[in-house]
Length: 287
Image: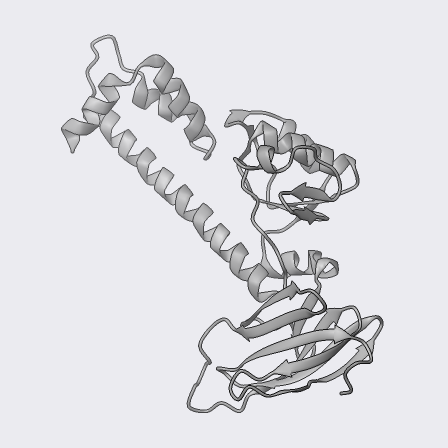
């Protein structure tokens, strides 16, 4: 392993070294350390100190990648269990899927009123261009955590400038869910009004109706003693609601009412329950 590390360092050319330095700088590793690893003395000898420094850098890279992965997984889980309907946007595909940016931001067949930038260290210039146009057109742009310090993996103030004129949000579940409260179409809460943290849903439009499927995202705390719980499901818009019982094939009215332009569904759920609702024209179903 020592010999392989020395071989890598020895063969690093100056232009290759610059590329590596810029990349590592993007994950907050000091340039001076990388210079010490990749720039050798005139003898061309790689010392044990060089190799040990390289090992430390590899460790820092691993830790930085792990931190980014953990943040990505946490954000995904928070949005799913926080009743937030969302999609991921690929930076590499964005220029193809979004020819002209505006508000809403049209990406493929979708259109977004709110865009979240989740604590990125670097953004592509093509992405920043779309986000700048989206913000200028009146779109809602939210940055989580700190501002991006790089553009195309090179030090730049462009991301910081956009960050300064956009909304900022702490990288915590409560802060993110609260910031996105007005963007929700479906809201899942316990009877006491507290947001559920172990339910997820799928909501889609059909030809003449909407379908809502709600299920648990994790095992019950105690599957042997399960008294269930009452939840309240709030859907934007006023609808009649039918339950499609997948256990026996029956279809019957759900318990629901209307308030402030919303449909509020009351449901008792046990630990392994899931529910399929059909939302139809208001007045066609009596609760």
